[in-house]
Length: 616
Image (cartoon, rainbow, N blue to C red; front, side):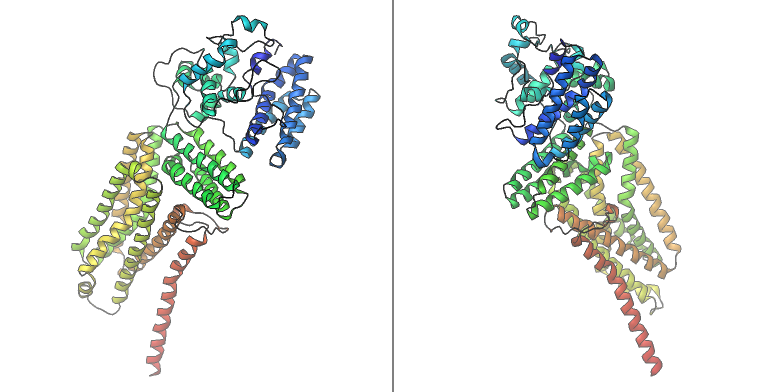
């Protein structure tokens, strides 16, 4: 890289000011440190290649400033200081250009996580505002068209950047341009613009990337703001094609999913501020609102795309909430990590799934959510057939069909009426109601099994067992067993339908067919099983399902803040409703143990009666 070209790059790169500058916030210092590391990553290898004494001396001064900036951050960056000094040592010796570049890039990513930094705008930049700001603040030196072809530029050393230069602009990002407007460039005529708001600086940064591009014709490919802010033009061309670059830069996305994640991000930042101010109640409320109003509405879609990331986000929100409730200073660290995870989720937004992948995800979701409900309904139907009470089969069918209707309504209205806390409350109430009805069904089936030992005629037994009250019970057992799964499936499929409605339709059709086959199979097998075996197996299924739904229902109440958090070291199995928390796990253990205890007491009582009869 020659000396004449150096100023052109510097004008858009975030160079550090002294970490000792008065009034500089910690966040600004983090950004400055990142800016110089990004500069070293890109230009140190070029300086080594040129062997220019001027450029090598400049790289050394930048490395020294990086050490000063890291030192100025104090304990929060102490772990990174040795790595920055190791980079400085190699730069001072003009050695290991590839290693320095690689280590700078890695360190930047680690610093972003540690600092909880935002490298993208909070809302879509206003390009018209950016254009107006450019005319007012930048055109005098860079020219109205951005070519820097104005008389004053000829007298400036170094010369202002030419925003029409494809080679220069192709390797830069809006984030680097944002840093330049924030901090300026020391040693040049490029000043900082502290009077501009963050939104104005982002608008200006994004606008300069449009100056060399033609008008947009058509619709741009899906890409998030987070991605556009941190991706060079060259990288966008490589991924999407030159024909889409203008639209990617000129038609900025405003997707609901990314906007919701930004709500979560701002909520966590608010919680960190309140926690630092000692407002424990406010910090806890802010974390809860960030989850319910930010993450929860888009969680189904995120789960279908990256379930591992969603698990990390949920764990991060749990840790942040615990830190907020206890007034722990660790809320700051947990919040920063959570902000980074939210930005990682934002980078994946806008990437729509194709029809085939959406179809298979839909099928898997339907099988996963519908399996327990299918088993319960099929067990009830098989039991009724075995007891020759087929006239009551329609009651069971009416129950699960009604639950599907409720699920369909949730699918249509879910995004508007059943988001955030409302969804969690609905899931919790449906789960706990189902627990009660399933336990009723288990006791009912168990009673039928015991009665068969004392009554010879099945029809005589059924006359007492299936009265009007039992019919209502059968309906609600079937209804509640399917309701929660139907509701949850509707929410998940709604998220997937945003990517591919046709894929959801085909996947749902395959899922319905697969579930019907399962019901018919279990129904036929159950009809052939001995009654005692059938009733015992059905009882176990109902109790196990009740234990699972109890965990899910209590967990949902914890997520809306209705129940406290009491975490413990244990595994998480979301599919089975097992969560590492005393509030949900202890009741599950009690519910699981209760039938065994009752069985043991019953056997002991029976053995005692037999012994008394023998003794008599």
